[in-house]
Length: 211
Length: 211
DNA sequence: GGTATGCGGAGAGAATTTCTCCGCTTGGTG
DNA sequence: CACCAAGCGGAGAAATTCTCTCCGCATACC
Image (cartoon, rainbow over all chains, first blue to last red; front, side, top):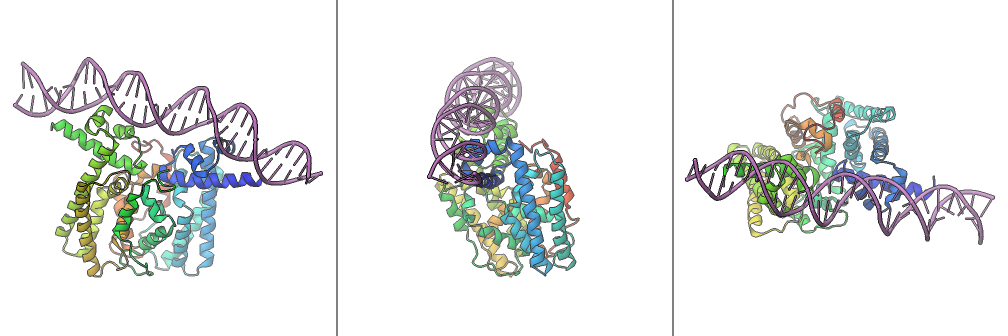
């Protein structure tokens, strides 16, 4: 495959990830095209229809997710720190997008099941270890962990997304959710005021926000 | 105002709240109409344009939010319990929707500022009291609280929304985020497995999901 | 029981979205 | 360097979706 074709493919997948996360799995492919900065023909040549794009995106993300879990397990001896490391990595990978599109209008074939099982097994390992070490309560399951990650690490809606342009805020709130409002797991730095949130309101048309 | 007119108005506002939350502030009003189960004329008669609808929705929600905060303060002597009570009430009120639409394409007039200030003051009171009582860490601000609520209590994307059809799951995860994964603030009941999450995938076209 | 207010469906016109054809550009190769 | 196949983006046709109005019928209040 030619180098520029590979580049286009990557840009389309990244754009699709953002767009599906923000606008749901029925978002117009047109929006993906605009976000990716390529011509429509480029998308339709590579991915004949919506399903092909979604399938490629999900497969790609799940594989990277499993890799991130394995990496976290290897890099952190402490089980809880390993889990936390993975959760942050999952946020960067937009785990939410994988789930969103995974669940909708996608015939789950053998390949998809395989890559999904691998990711699930890896993450279950992380969670189980942290639980056995007594760092995670017993009444929290895989579903809770995954959904909490999806909830916290989805991009903020609309203009609020500008608050997290650098992706720092999501990590802050991930730590907050992991530790709880009272926890002092690690210092959070300066609090986020409400004024900043309101200020994000006054700037519609920020690049990449309302499209 | 006639009784059926008031009823229609309420149904439209509730539907708009859900739809804007799920599909962003540019969601077609057509979708609101369908969700509300009324005719298009009914919506356009009551709300001449999108802005009128958004304005009415925001005003309504902010007022109810302020009332919920005051209620929580009165009902719970313990400051942390009061804060938690409010957060759960805010989730039921779909606080996220207020924020989403508040921030987008809406000229903030005096009335809106007033109702917003009242809500903010109330919530600041709750947060400040909990912080002074040592139940909330000092490096968490109003913005953090609000955004964490928005993040956790937004409806789950796509088909996952079916998991939370009864609205129980959001309260579970709210408590989880408040207490942290390790906290034993209060028992969480049976853990949510990953299989349930996957199972939610197999049922596209669930009423009210893809629409 | 009368009447004014309100309701929903049908549908016109506008806007958006999907997807293809085609001429130009670019990357890899000898 | 020069060739050429692979790839790219824009213009645009066809289908779909969205906005908003007119009108005959139903329903709430007096």
